[in-house]
Length: 181
Image (cartoon, rainbow, N blue to C red; front, side, top):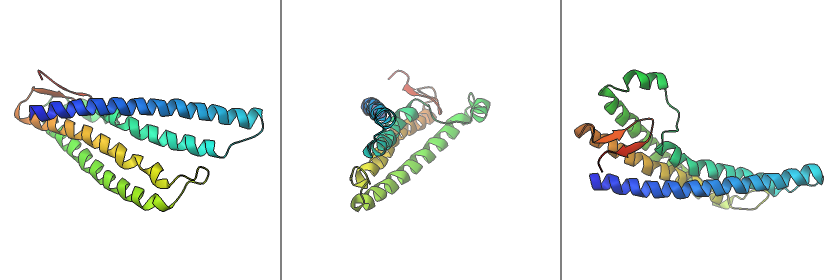
């Protein structure tokens, strides 16, 4: 199991890094488009119809591409009061495993639903850019798939920690690192 966790950790590290770079590029592209849009609208009293649509699509793609990194490093929403009450207790290993398993199952469902939405949207087009909506919705199965890979790594770490306590340091609401691997 150690080799699987290490390999998945390497893949997730690489994928989240690339997704983060793409999200950053989208952020700067979106910023440039919005600046051009504001300049044309308020300085030149003219406007492009496509700038709002493109910047909105870029923002959605950016959020979905950053989601795996957020989950990997524990930048997700948590109930700190609950976590603080059981953080140092052995029960936290089981609670963490149950939470991550439920997250993984929900992500698999989200991949399925996102794929269905993307497949059905191929005949519809955006108003200004005339892009197939399937291009816009393609980020849903991609983003949820990337998060599911991160969740699978965390799930394996938490499961391995049940049999070898202390071998893997896994903070349910934080980053997962392997000790001694």
